[in-house]
Image (cartoon, rainbow, N blue to C red):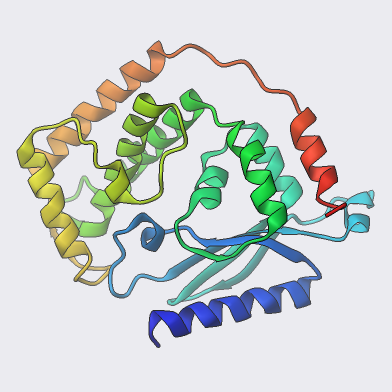
Amino acid sequence: MNESEIRMQIIQKLSEIETQEHVKILHAVESGSRAWGFASPDSDFDVRFIYLHEKDWYLKLNSQRDVIEYQLDDVYDINGWDLQKTLKLVYKSNPTVFEWSNSPIVYQTSELFQNLKPVINSYFSPKTGIYHYLSTAKHNYHAYCEKEQVKFKKYFYVLRPLLACYWIFENYTTPPMLFSDLRMLPQAQEIDTIIQHLLAIKTQTSELDTGKKIPELDSWIQQQFELVAQKAEALPNEKNKNWENLNSAFLQSFLS
């Protein structure tokens, strides 16, 4: 199937979820390497969605499951979060929510969610975001990039969150999803040349293709871990925002 046919199939699957789970999907996007702009030809489709139950579902005394995991195979990875869970994570400035909100690949959305976006974005915490992306970069580097043979795609799972940190330092806003938009690299030209070469390989080869680790890139990455940590530590602590706007937005969702 081509991507147009797959998109139609994804939209059909979202409709099936609404029917089977008795929910309304407010926003559904691509969240993985395709949304980041460095997918391999055989990359799967990481579909994420935010949904709303009927009002009575939220009034039950027993706790309810607030995640829907619909499909996970070689082609699709489809799951979503309930709106109440999502807004609780917004309060904590969870970067995943901001990424879903700002994905460049939108399968479907709603007026209700578009009205929520300004509220969601107002809860973004630069310091929280930087520590999240730095932790992600470190975890991915130690898990995947310290071997002699490295999957090419794993370098980007380190580079993208590192560059997201620098975006936040410069702009104090949520970083864009596309890797190309994050290319404000604080490094020598030879590092940028290596990254361009890796991009060309990544977009033309299998997800599983490997190559020898790149010492120059490894050295630069490790330097950035230190620099980002120092700059993050120097940022002022942020005051907790209140729940009022999120509570209001949640209640308003049942009046739309």
